[in-house]
Length: 343
Image (cartoon, rainbow, N blue to C red):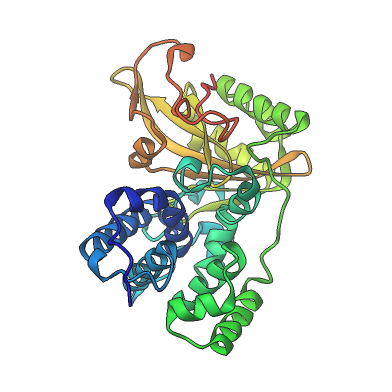
C-alpha cells in the first residue's frame, strides 16, 4: 500500500481563505476564526506525516478544522446580535447600557470569500450577519453539518466520514438544523454588486452622514429599520427613534470621516470619530443591509481592533480623503465598494 507524500506548507496555505470562512460561520468571530485556522494549519503541519492520502487534502484539513472549532465551542455560550436576544427595543434615553461580550463580529470579505465568481453568490449569502447569527442557535455538530451540506455542498457520506457519524445521523442533524433556521427571514439587501438604485442609496447615506444631516439620514431608512451597537446590548427599532438617537447620544459622531469597506458580503463603512487631541480615531465598522430601496438595518460594531483586519489604520491624520489608500487595492474586482474613501 502506498501513502501520499506529506503535504508541504505551500500545499496548505491555499486553503486559508475557505477554512477561515468555514471557521467564521462556525464561531461567529473573525478573531476566533483566524486563531482556529492558524491552529488547524499548525496541527496539519505537525501531523503531515500521518496524511495517507485516503481522503483529499481538503477533506483532511476540514476534519482538523472541525475538531478545532468544536473544541473552541465546548462549554461556550452562543454569540448573537443585540436584536436577536429577544428583549424589547431600548428607549433612546436608555439606549446604551453596560458593554457585554459574546457578540457576532463582522468579517472582511477578503478574509472569507472565494475569488471564483461562480462560488461568490452563495458564499456572500452564507456570511451575512443574520445568517451567521442564526447559525449560533444550533448545537455545534448540527452547525457543522448544515455548513458542510448546505453551504459547501458536501455529500452526506463525506460529512459522515468527516464527523465519524453515519449517513442517517447526518441527515437527521441536517433536518433538525434546517427546521431551527426556517424562521430566518431572507431580506433583499445591498450587495457589493450594486445596481444604480442601490448605489445611489449608499452614496446618499455617505453624503448625509458626512454632513450629519439627520433629516436626510432618516429619510433613507425604512420605517421599521433597526440599529444596534455591539458591544452594547441596546438596539433601536424605527426610523424616528434612530433619528432621535442621532440628534441625542449619537451627536458626538458629527464630523466623522467614513471609509468604504466590504464586510459579510455587503457594503460597510469604517467610521473615524473626531479626536479632541487632533485627527480622527477608529470608532466603528458599520454593516448596512437594505430592503426595498431603503436601509433596513445598521449594525455599528464599536470595536477599533477590527480596523487592522480591514487593512485600515486606527487613526487618520488631516490628509484629504482622496489621499487615503484603498485597503482593497490588492484585490481588484473582489468587491466594488471595498476601500473607497467616502467623505
